[in-house]
Length: 382
Ligand code: SF4
Image 1: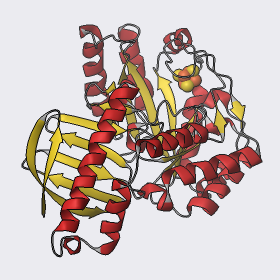
Image 2: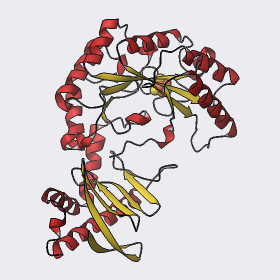
Image 3: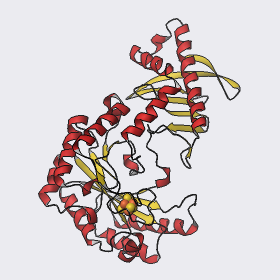
């Protein structure tokens, strides 16, 4: 434990920070004062708490305050916050260095990382933001909640459908497959951005809106590249899929994809009501989706299904429950229940009622986990 004095927002507080080594980086904490800073393996701060205020840095350099209703700080505010965190780190190192045996309170490797973190400047953070922008020319707009911490690799950008009326991310964004060379360059940029050990992340998500639209041959080569570059990764590889925009695949193709690391596919079902689904911009025919889910399950690949709350009438709830009831879902599969929230619109009573009906109904007819999916809360954090 070390003692330091830190000035922020005009008040001086005596703060005792403990430095704890983490799987990837360090955590500096004073639980009494409610102050903590999490550093990544390269020494950049990735989260910072000061009392009730909690901040996280995103891959693209923006800084977000709060969790329930996250707000993006202006560039000036973000710079001021980063400067404050840097001052805190510098004070920590100075305090440790001035105390006899202070550095030895933590191991040499941890102290060197702390030292390196304290020597970073705003321009280093700015360069990291540029690296993030270069690695992801199409920002990562959304991931399933259980995959928020994945390494995102984008063998394609955009969406082959891109017509859905409710879609906040891909409307009108043309689907484009990266060439082999561009993909290799993208992967090495992501690697440089996340640092050694890929930032301790334990899964890979193939972006963007529908990586399963790639030909099987191309998808296998992408999975092989992931395996060569990332190695065996605990949570395997996941991707969004859409049965209406995918090449025809035989059972053997799914088995090959599973053997090459594909572990989970997430479908945007939205509703089991075909008429409503068509109104939303997707196919009315729900049979191809059911067939693809069955084929994936046969190959041992886990399923995710997103369902919207706050669309259509009662038939949405009834038909969705009926459709899901006949899907071969197990406890390891996930249904993501997503209240449809427009820009700045709060969940209305109508949406909340439908959400509750779906939540209760789904939990009683399927073994799959049913979890909330608050799309507006997604940020691809550093
Ligand atoms: S298919 Fe999915 S990603 Fe594409 S436009 Fe529709 S909701 Fe958006």
